Length: 262
Image (tube, rainbow, N blue to C red):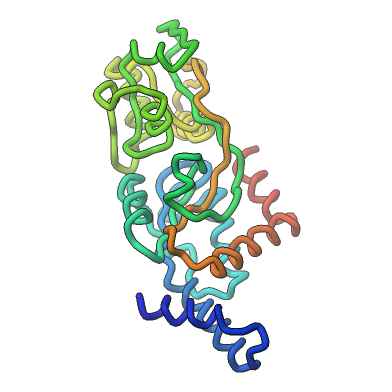
């Protein structure tokens, strides 16, 4: 694996006047790099989730089409479904890895390289309406039992905002959104920090009455991206970005958004 990338980096720095054979080799090496990507996602509907044994969602469908545009052998079946914390560590520590859907923040900027944006995102604090919780600042949140997903942006925003880890009920695993909503119902936590569309999707999917809950504070409005290990070659990222941009220009991107958000 490491040898592949050394060869890749050597080839892309060859002079622009290289022969046709050199260009062909470069294309072949780029394709191999795409085929060797370790692509990881989590349960995060409507962006990425599993239904009837198949991975689906906005980010999944876009990635599949991007791979097709690059003539990769990788398909939907090659995308790995892992708990968020495991995937996050993998992309931090190991080359040739991609994780999605990842909120791009200033804190994360130095740790990853990016392809996107996929779509906009809002990270919010949820509570049960009957609790009549009022939050006007991050400091107010300290007064409550706070549910978060391990290493998720909802946790990281709280920590960087001054909320100590000891105040957080941190949960890992695959079905963390549903389990956190159950904790809210059982009064094991009082508020839950997560992405709005993902929470609302899970409520609808599991027959949970959304009218019983409310957003009591907005932590961040941002954008979702595909995150790559920081040593990923720029040429590979450029090709993936070009593929995504083409999907947007061709109208395929909007069709996918309409499929999952309407």
